[in-house]
Image (tube, rainbow, N blue to C red; front, side):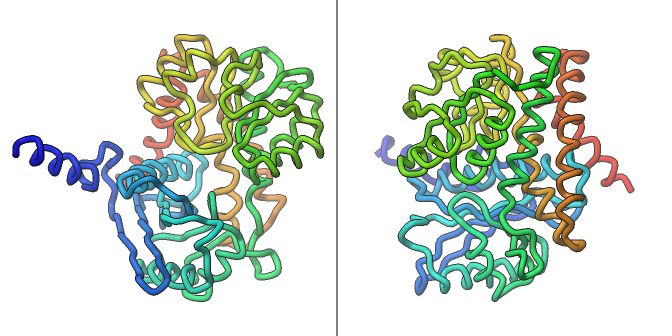
Length: 364
């Protein structure tokens, strides 16, 4: 009986919001369920000190509800830092829909989800993310005005992926400037893990600068397409960590920088678009630094997409969004230098800057 009781206690803890290791003073967590459409979603609002929370909706076939909860808690916290360090008057929020994006999507499901977003009264503004699209956001928009990343013809900014990729590219160039003394990526070898929307645009930018690009992805069809379009060399999903490369660019899901992969990585820079790249921020952040690898904080250099959809709220201007995204270069350099001066991890330095801005607003 003791073993059964311990197991039940563990299961309850895994599904508990307050006991979840990724819970970090989140203001609100909402579970959304609708039997008719099959909707199972979690919306997490982390912090709204700087403004309403804004973050995309991810649709993924999570192995368990506990995995979905952990993901949405980590992602929403990252959005708080992302908005704060980018100087945006936004808070951090995120949502996940538990389901197969290739089989379970429907207009009814996203409209029902839109009703849940509407019920939050503007505290959370959604957008597209992994597994969702501009078309899905159009269906959400039929039930709530609290959505961004809409098609250009409807007054939105369209697909934010090109701007996200540009921000990652700027962050990567800043890391190269810090590491090599020059921000030129010509001749540098870059391993891009994940060539979905953002990854493909990043490959395009890298190849235009004559970087040598290696790519991996679980989607064989997309992999072949990107390889053919940009003359990028295909490597296996697991083999990318063993490449002799200058820069590793994780652009798929998070936690790919972990104890196993760090021991195999031969790169000198990690700079990619994935959220929560470090499986454990403290343990693996230190391992990366001890190995002499420069880490460009993910929530900073992948902020281009957020900057892009934020601009919709005040009337979209593509040139202004791109110029704001270009500034990621300067902030990345500032953070890498600060981490040296204070002898702290780059991620810690980035968080300090974000938290200083939030704290200053809280005191007003």
